[in-house]
Amino acid sequence: MRVRWDRVGRVGLLVVLAAVMGLYAAHTLAYLSTRAEANRQSAVVHQLTLENAALIKQQRSLNDPATVQRDARALGMVLPGERPYVITGLSKP
Image 1 (cartoon, rainbow, N blue to C red):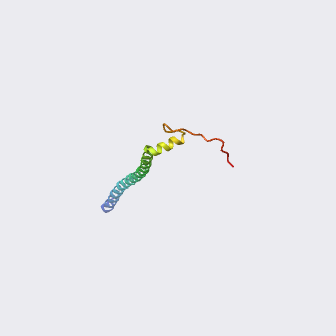
Image 2: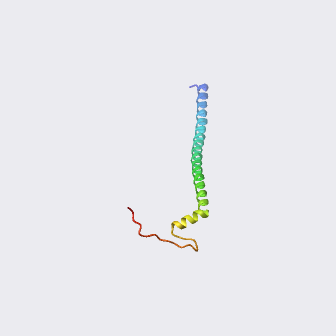
Image 3: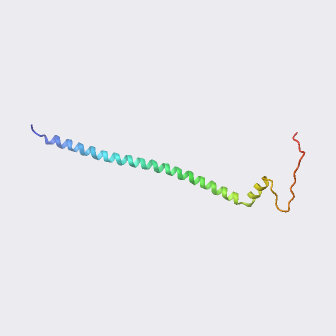
C-alpha cells in the first residue's frame, strides 16, 4: 500500500485549520461574554449614578432650613416664643 502524501498533507492542514478556528472561537466567546458583562456593569453604574444624584438632591433639601421648618410645622411643632393655636368646631358642609 502506498502513502498518498498529498492527501495526508491536506488532512493535516484541515486539522490545523480546525484547531486554529477552535482557538479563535473560544476567544470570540470569551470576548462576547466579557463585553456583555461590561454592558451589564455599565447599566448598573448608570443606575447608581442616577440614584446618587437623587440622594444628593434629597440631602440638600433636607439640610435646607425652610424644609426643616416646614416638616416640623407639619408635625405640629412651633418656634420658641410662638403660641400654638388649635381651631376646633369646623364642620364640613
